[in-house]
Amino acid sequence: MNPTAPNHFASGQVTFLGAGPGDPGLLTLRAVEALASADVLIADPQVLDVVRVHARAQVDTPLQTPADEASIPADVPALRDTANLVMTAARAGKRVVRAVTGDPGLDGYVAEEMLACAAEGIVFEVVPGIAAAVGVPAYAGVPLRDAHGTDVRFIDARTADERCWTEVGASDATAVVSTSLDSVAAAAGELVSAGRKPDTPLTVTVAGTTTRQRTWTATLGSVAQVLKAAKVLPSADGGQPVIAVVGERSAAARREPLSWFESKPLFGWRVLVPRTKEQAASLSDQLVSYGAVSHEVPTIAVEPPRTPQQMERAVKGLVTGRYEWIAFTSVNAVKAVREKFEEYGLDARAFAGIKVAAVGEQTAKALVAFGVKPDLVPSGEQSAAGLLEDWPPYDPVFDPIDRVFLPRADIATETLVAGLIELGWEVDDVTAYRTVRASPPPAETREAIKGGGFDAVLFTSSSTVRNLVGIAGKPHNVTVIACIGPATAKTAEEHGLRVDVMSPEPSVHKLAEALADFGAARRDAALEAGDPVTRPSERRPGSRRRARS
Image (cartoon, rainbow, N blue to C red; front, top):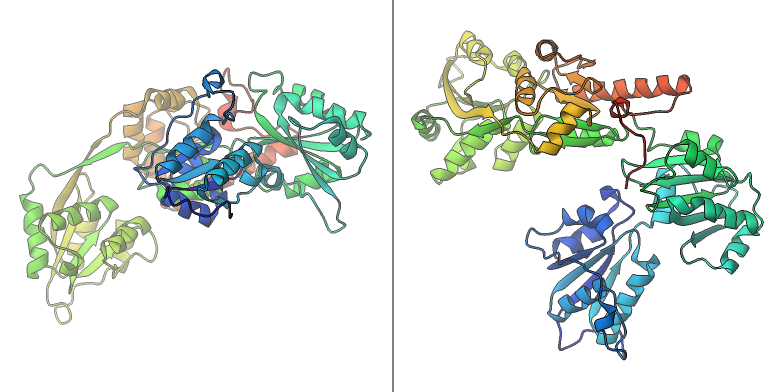
């Protein structure tokens, strides 16, 4: 009998899925597909946040509780709680995804769950993931093999017996040891007792592949002293898992030029972005590419105009041919017009024959998502001034209509209106939405802002300075303040903030780039002085440098 053949009495199926060591970007395409179709998601706690974002909003994530072994009859094999959850959901005909840290093929408990499925004839599949023992060394800059080749041995210190330690200790193989932070020294001692020299290099990496990753270089004989000197041991977090690589490839001289991940310019920095997640999407992606953790805090909320009649007349004018152009200066303006269109049962076809302008990449993307391709996006500065530089003057010969519809915020400046009028256009300047100060963020976020828990803040306008200070308080003086331009910097200084970084251009992406340059220079200065590389938040009073799970 084929153990994975379908059971005619049950239609459920199980996908045993490897979620990798922690970096969400290491999920495979097949894993994302499986998660998108899951009815039930049962995940190791360490990777639940990594996989849940790819599952449907309706997916069931049952709570896992320790099994009460006393309640299981003696003649029934005991299964862990996760196995019981998997089997119960599969028997009910559900599509179950069982997500584990690393790779399911290296998890002995998951093997038991697979055997249980096979015994009942429940269909299952395995989606491999990147094993921590392979992925973490790669992120730590420690290749396990080179052109000369060598044996690589993988050891789980929790289950390794004397024979295992003896075999590895007597060889010159590169040893990859899965253990815990407070057990590294004991594992090193086992290898020395088995024959490895005490001066054999090793690296110890905690929270591998995440922005909390930290790696220490030592030897088998000195690792206990190195971790103690780094003040990570003794620690209440000593039980967190680590990957230790033993062998010449983990020597400091070899590792330093290959440490691509931890040497990113903003590695581990918590950067506050005073925008919504939607507005900050591409900016946050850019910050992540520099090694930072982006934390979005909206400082404004968008509400409909107090009197909607002006907006209603303008939208009807679009349909009746009143306008030659419509200019969108923000994503919120696109959203406001789109909502009004939907209210009237209109769609993007109503833009036929109308030229469309957009300021900014995100505004253009919002229009494309609506089904409208902009005819004009500034070739230079993404601002009202940049749009005016490329806007054509009104020509009565080529332009049958001389009117522009400008939907915008109630607090927008008059720069664009005045510039269009100067170019000969008539402008219907319409309040499409109002901006009001957002509600305060959670208490934890406010405390982090005022207490120095963030490493940097990106201010993209004067209003973001005023509103953030108003709803959350003034950032701590250890926090790096980055401003998009002189006017924003002046507002920040008026609020008692020291401006550390100024964007060379009024662009959010140039602002992030300038912050990355600042971080790189700061890192280089620390290395040149022989000092440890620390984040700005680690300078605040009472802060402690320690590895966190």
